[in-house]
Amino acid sequence: MTHYPAIAIRSTLRLLANHCIIPPLRVALFRLSGIRIGKRVMINMDTKFIDNWKPGLIEIEDEVSISPFVSVVADAMPNQSFLMQYGVSKAGRVVIRKGAWLGVGAVLLPGSEIGTGAIVGANAVVTKNVEPFAIVAGVPARKIGDVRERSKKTDPGDGEADPRRVK
Image 1: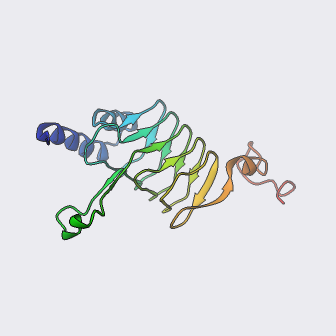
Image 2 (image 1 turned 90 degrees about the vertical axis):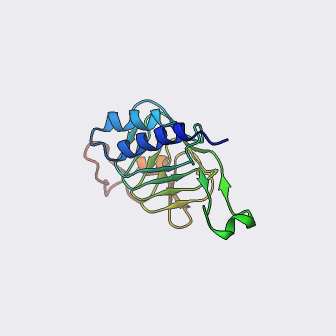
């Protein structure tokens, strides 16, 4: 049974969150709308959470950074299309683990999990799980590196690559 008042409230909270210019308030509004969100999480404006307003399908752990225009899809269906009869709908929990960073315009599809400390590149489409500390990019997203290897090549003091240490 569909609970329209609850859906209306969650929908309104997400609308407000997407137009809120105060980051902590934006995160609080998303929390109230049914998304599990940890501590010290940054969710930029124009982030879309698509879960058919079902609480608990999307979980974001501590210290996650979500760039603008990211789409997190936990429940996908063709709505009023005749395609519904072919069973093309897909739903699955989406989990973003501690310290992950999602680049601008990234898309996470149902059933995907982003590992601890992983980086998803701009406009990447994640169709399967991303291992911890992996750097993924592309459509579909593929591993292009490892955060732990990259940290060995940069000088944490100025953020620029040290030419003496780059192979």
